[in-house]
Image (cartoon, rainbow, N blue to C red; front, top):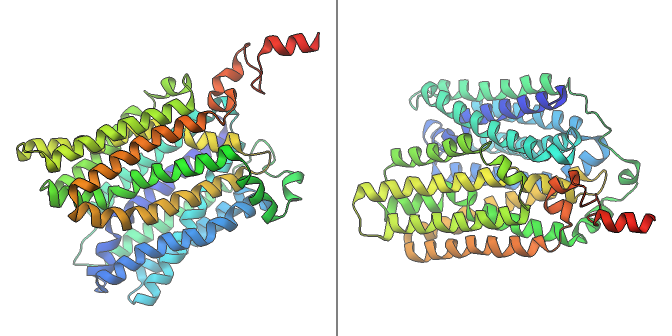
Length: 425
């Protein structure tokens, strides 16, 4: 791991650590501590999603034209100002505007950092780089949330101001760290700069493999991340009688499995076809939804229901550990030279759409229609497997399994080496 990659990973950890301080407590802060009510608190969460959807289509083009580092630094400063302003806000208007700035900055960080990882890693080590990123993000969120929970006091607005000030400080520290990064190769290509914005989007939409990956990504995020804090938690409380403390334990189990399993599964993932790994995740999550069904619809004891519900989150964590070294590197490998930022931003946009729609659909279903909710998302998980198998047919051998690039049997173009030798003869 080079110096640039080490700084990028430190940046990922710091940003996740800062977010962990405030994300779990944002609703309580707006609704109760500032006394603005549940409606305003809900609007704040919606503003995060809307801000991301607005800026991401432009972020990819900016990364292509300017490079990922300047875009990242601008996003960090914007997020820092939004976080600090949010901690000082006392009215609905200032809270919402601050949330918009924070949400926009956070959204742009993701594709910018992902593009820097692409620029600093060859395809052979890219899976490991993204696995490390995901590991540090979860570790930073967990540690930040744990420390923030001990600092926060719902009777004191000043304690929340301190949390948001710490978050802003983390973003500014990250500015200082990332300003020293020097990518080993130029992040911009003249060919990419010569394309119009519409032309680059048209090229992306013309890439059948990328379009199929975006559809698959939407289902992945909709059926998992989009349910964690909405439909699945509502289902657990209403159908399985899960307490709020148990919800926290389930989320902790999810993070713990990711932290423990991430590097344990990495060698397994690197030796398998990416499409088959994603297909396996669909099956694992189908089992997770079946276990959740037992927790709320079975007739076991409360202890069994609690254990099953926590196991559901743990199984989701195992699937996430398999996905992190698989999906993000595949996005990068599908991008033409110079357009990694555009492709990363497009995939981040799909993710945000899923995270915006997922809670809106899953929340009411999970709270009231328990059996249909479980059945629907079990079928979504099986759909992941079907979509992954179909995606595999659109990928070259090396895109599907980068380890083949180091083999004498397959060349970079995916053609057998024997055929190449015969043609040269």
